[in-house]
Amino acid sequence: MQLATEFRVYVGTYAKYNAGSIAGEWLDLSDFADHDDFHAKCLEIHADESDPEFMFQDHEGIPGQLISESWISPEVWEWLEMSEFDREITIAYMCLTDYTFAELGGVWVAKRQAEDNYVGQYESESDAAEAIAGESIPDNFPSWIVIDWDATWGNQLGQDYLSGMINGELWVFNNR
Image (cartoon, rainbow, N blue to C red):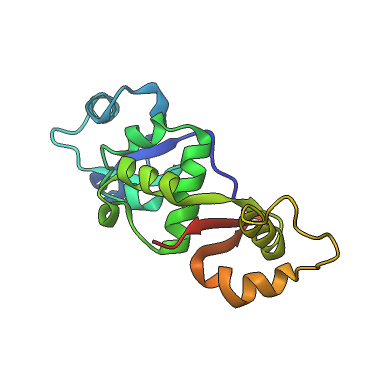
């Protein structure tokens, strides 16, 4: 999963679009302190209309749950405040659980829930099983006993955790 490092929106208006024009401007959301600053810039760009109805014709780096063609959530600026890793685990958690920001209570609650349930990232299920179960194996465990980590994951741990391959890595979260 490659997350964007730029957060941009192309802002046009429905009136221009209906008249056959896509005239507007790309705006970098990190240039604005909040939704109000962003809205003020949109009004400035489309000052040629008395009551512009903004149309967000394209966007980059913004989860689809926070923007639509006619709406942008003020929570986008909360999303921008997060570190890249926090955005990454939040999106991974939401992909694996099918939760939406709204269902989780907002961007920060989703981030907190993802952090609280995050176990780690692994190359494979057997690596995850060894790391998770390995914490319970005593130091004096006999070296001649061989553990089938794939079977350990498949028979038990795989049901106890949420997991999925995302961009070549197995993301694992507690299943609570």
